[in-house]
Length: 141
Figure 1 (cartoon, helix red, strand yellow):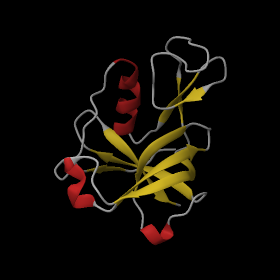
Figure 2 (cartoon, helix red, strand yellow; figure 1 turned 135 degrees about the vertical axis):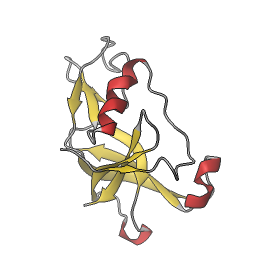
Figure 3 (tube, rainbow, N blue to C red; figure 1 turned 60 degrees about the horizontal axis):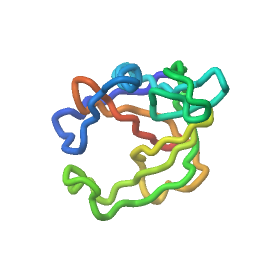
Figure 4 (spheres, one colour; figure 1 turned 90 degrees about the horizontal axis):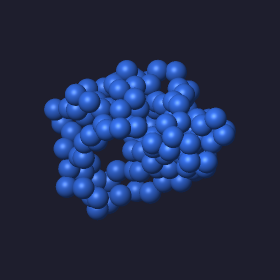
């Protein structure tokens, strides 16, 4: 599945990822609206990318494409910005998203607070924040 990529470079004031090493394929895919996770030969699935499998220690686990859908495992509403660039966004929501493939990741949730509930279905979109990266952001399905 491919998610929409919205160009947010002009208004983004938050942190900007710097793709290096094992994260380069992940960030390149985000610019194309694709969410990748790693699936090791041992069966472990992980996200965000790492140079080694967190289960068996194998080097460079291969990437697989996610369907880009999942559920809200938990979330928190941030009234005090964790980064100076988030001051104008408060309150904002950060959620632990459990992807259909199993891995969980922390991501922004772009939704009305009244519509959020644990277990709710979400899909990925992307906010392009630099020439090298678009961050995954989840919205209710």
